[in-house]
Figure 1: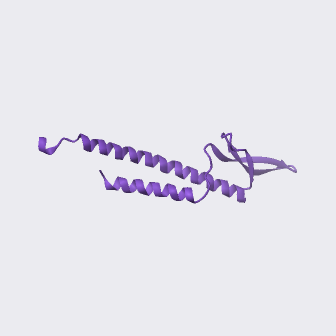
Figure 2: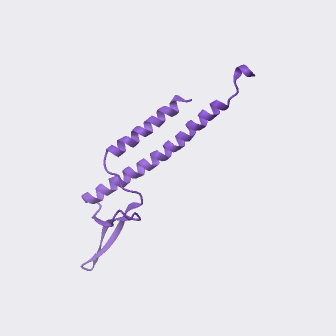
Figure 3: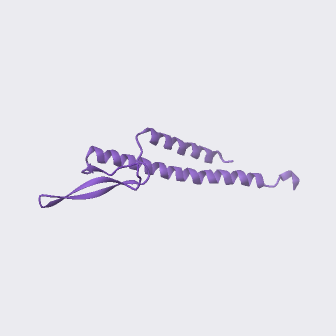
Length: 112
């Protein structure tokens, strides 16, 4: 089997671990959405945490530069990066498994 595939699998696993260790992750089905608030005849754009996940409550995050906004944006970015890396890892594992199967199915040279 290809040592390159195993090396790539280890690289992906290391990246996933590093991302997990770098901070909290947003749960699935959580995102940031704009919230328009009328104040004094003007409309102000704030942002809120929105979720289809019942464990996560909707909460105001303030403006784009606010600490809460940046924190949740980073959590969502980490979550999305891990989802993508896990997808790549899954495809890579399928290649490794396929290669292992193909090697087993090759005819023995001596029996030809």
